[in-house]
Amino acid sequence: MSWKRGAYPEFTLEDAVAVLFMLRNPTGRKAISEVLELGEGSVRTLLKKLGSLEVIESTQRGHSLNEKGRKLVERMESCFSGAKPTGKIDGYPAYALVLRNPPEFKSIELRDEAIRFHARGAMILIVRDGKPVFPEDERPLDETMPELAERLGVLNPGEGDMVIVTWAESEADAMKSAYHVALTLKGECIPEEISSLVR
Image (tube, rainbow, N blue to C red; front, side, top):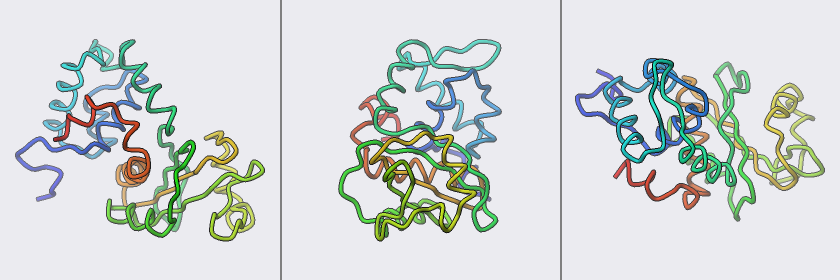
């Protein structure tokens, strides 16, 4: 039996962050369950908790952020963007997000962090002169992986921003491991009421 289907509703802070970004558009419980590979019980519990914080509203079309929820996501977005699919790397689905004003970091430690969180691999890039480069040697991504460099353009990263790319066996793990790296660096950007959901 998979650990994601246990008797207890289980979700992580990464799940909660992913759901908040997803709910910028009305989304049904089943879709959330499929995208995040979470049991319906866990999704129900998470939505109920978000409902009790009065950050989402529920209608026939699904669940979505209300005004308070949108402000909360805007606060998170001042630190990092929502994760977006960026095709495949080594045959695995990949996701990427932009982290603004990155603190001091070691790429290898962040890659290890992503792998601990079910990623197969991760790439940490910094935008220099408008292009994502590898911070260790300033080598531009478009020299080695031009297609990926082009796909990352949709994220519109700014000068000095970090781009986190993670890939994993499943789309859900790729997305959540990208959020995990962002939270490792910018956990303080998550409002206390959201962090408290998973204690």
